[in-house]
Image (tube, rainbow, N blue to C red; front, side, top):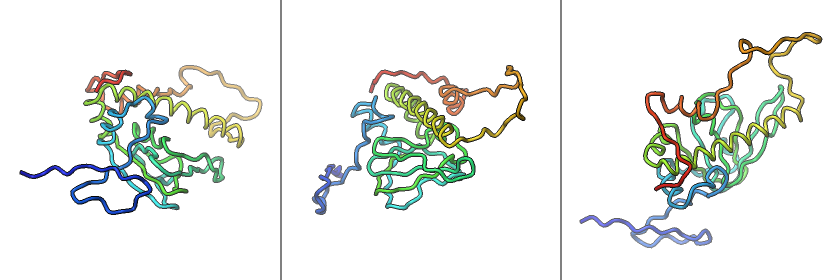
Length: 217
């Protein structure tokens, strides 16, 4: 009968080889930011639906304009986020342990809106839309907490973007000549898709997904 290897989480300060027959566990997902509503078991369950990667300083995780369809969580380390705004390269923010990236691209894959580079050796955990679908279908409680965290994260991103638009005097792409006016009507006002409408569209309208904010394992 084949023996199942025991698991061992080595202290960060120990560089020795692991005892024979033991397997080192990846670092746990941090219960911070978007993941703050998940308990330890829910975090462990979620971790099994994605994968971990380590990156050295200078590595480019996401390049602005390139196809992007993954959601990232910074487990350890630090990242710098930048983008071209109003024709110039602008440093937007940094991401520390517990912060998330790519939550919009997870629900609606497309060109990345910013570039992300490593400025301190980092461990990242990521998942794609198929991973998210599987997690939601099998862990409704933890999935509800994750989606509420995403909604909060997106709200913060929107607030930061509005502040940057004001700070850098970014002119909207569509402007009217000076002195002109146009009435805002239902016909000429763009429709803004809400977070949960976008989620439902991404998951597929053929399935009904019940979202719970309670942690039920």
